[in-house]
Image (tube, rainbow, N blue to C red; front, side):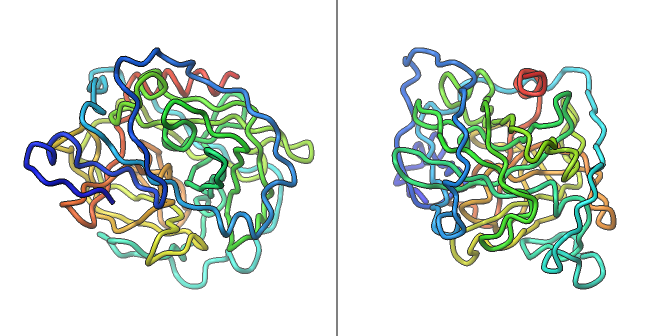
Length: 330
C-alpha cells in the first residue's frame, strides 16, 4: 500500500488498487491513446498448479491525475439476465456447501461457504506482466458469444502494456482447476482505461477460447449484468484475495450497504477487508445467497490507505457497457 505525506496528495493520489506486490507509475496523461483490445496467444500448459500458487497478486498504485472523467450515470438502465450452465459437470466435494448459506449482513470478509452459481462463475485470473506471473479475480457474465469474463482494467492492461498468458480459472481451488483453465483469445478495457488508466473506468474483459468443445457459459454458467443501475444498493462482493491474511486458496465475500465515493472517484464503496488478488472480483446487487445468483454492477478495484477495510469498485455506466459490447460480440 502506498503512503502519502500531505493532505493534497491524499486527495489526489490516495487510492491503491487492490492487488499486492508489484508497483509502478501510472502513464502520463499525454501518452498516445492505446488500442482498447489485445489479441492473446493461447497458454495451454503454462499455468501449472505450483505456478498458480506462486503468482503474485498485482499491486497498482494510483498517481495524481489518474482520475480524469466521471462515468456517465444518466443512461437508461440495461439489464442482461444470467445464463444457467448447460453442461452437467459435478462440483468437487471441496466446493460443495459445508453448511447452510451464509446470512451475515453486513460481512466485512469471510470464506464463502454457501455454494450456488457464484462458486462456478467466479474464479482467479492469471497472467504474466513484465516477465512476472501475477493474479487477479474475475467472473463469467452472460454474453452473445457465451465466452466473456469481466474483471478490473488493471487485470488486463497496466502501465501501457497488455498482460500475456492470460487465463481464467473458475472455481479455483488451491492450485486445482476443477472446470479447467480458459485461455483468453482477446482482452478488452474501457476506452478510458486503455488510453490513460483512468481509475473511474477500471473495467476489463476477456473473451476465452472454447475448452473441450464447450463454451465457458455452457460449463459454469454466467451471471447477469446491469449498466446504469444507480448507487446506494445492498451489495455482495466476491474475490480471491491472495495477500495476507488471505492466501488466494478460497473464494471470499463481503456484504453490506454500498455508498458513492466522495473523495477521488465516482466509484461504489463497500466495507470489506479483502486484500491483493481480489481485484476484478464481482460486485452483485439483488444477490440471492441460496442460488448464488446476482446482478453484477461492479468489480473490486481499489482502497484508500487512510480508510482501512473499505473497498471501491467502478460504476458500470455507458463506458463499461461499450467495452462489454465489444467483448461479447468478438
